[in-house]
Image 1 (cartoon, helix red, strand yellow):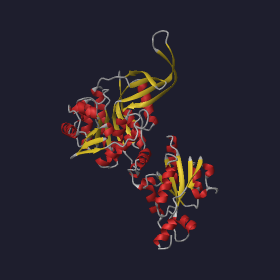
Image 2: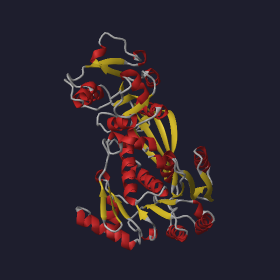
Image 3: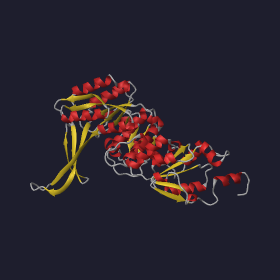
Image 4: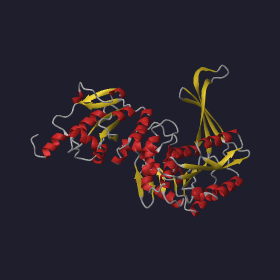
Length: 476
């Protein structure tokens, strides 16, 4: 994930921007005027919606974002520009059109239940003059972007003329255009690099009932040929992502728990755009998008996902390399903060783990059972030598860390150079501190910073020392 963290992507989003407005309150009575509930409003919140949710996802991934589109000359338009400025999105290419209403969707929610939604917006196509203004501005800046996203919510911004104009400009400069489509006619997106329809949208657009591998391939091919796409792609909800470049490839979902799919499509297209912008091939792009979607559907409401969250999620699935599980002090502190914010219980143990054996593995499996995230502090080579003698360690710290990180029970490994993990425990404040049963009645370093101490007995006859003696041919 280091490549993603260091990325300097610049992505342009064009589409239907809107404000999602929430009125939160309680309901304890029925109106005497009419048989309707009376909601006492406690607070109001606003977030970017529509194409704005794509922008939020791109910003969360660390991308630089610019936006183009059309809003109204009204208070909602002013509010929307302010919201974009607050997250450092370049909005110079937003066109203000007279007599057009900026989209704002207001939801009244009482006791976690949506009671009512009312919308204020224009849904007719934008004026041709607005199309021409956008195209003129994008023509002057198209080479600055790594990828362009067209986010179509069917509110009239992405007209046929605008879509074809943007795709033509981008293709002339070898800039990829990705489209989150709307409706049953995808012809206005002809020439884009790829579209991201879900299964239902693809069925509607192609007229093909996708029910097996053959019909899926038929739909992918029809989209690719009729829309002249470089890559044909369909998102399949719990079945992941399917794509066709020279052949059909499917990438199964990696979601562990699904709480809410709201905004998952915006996360998918944002993560695809971001991965493409850093030079990933289409297979790696699809895998990255699946991971991002797996994180976001585990959240409530329209949500975003960060690179760190994707990395931690991939680690939890044990689909990442051991390197991704080895952290320094700074990184593990940030990881623990995020995990704790998500209600995870942190378990810590430490040791030399010189020659990994079954006793170590069983000990770590028991330690992991005490919580959600197991962090293993690992003594450095110098510290092992001071503790065990000049002939130790047998295996260098890098090898020991890699082997530990490959274990299913271990979430993260943190090497430390001191003789004890006191400073590491002090920084992490684990919920559970685990040590070997031989510490019964002894003082355990760092207990004052831990929620509780758990002692775990070792497997009899299993130790690194005994393993070394056996190798050397001595009596065990």
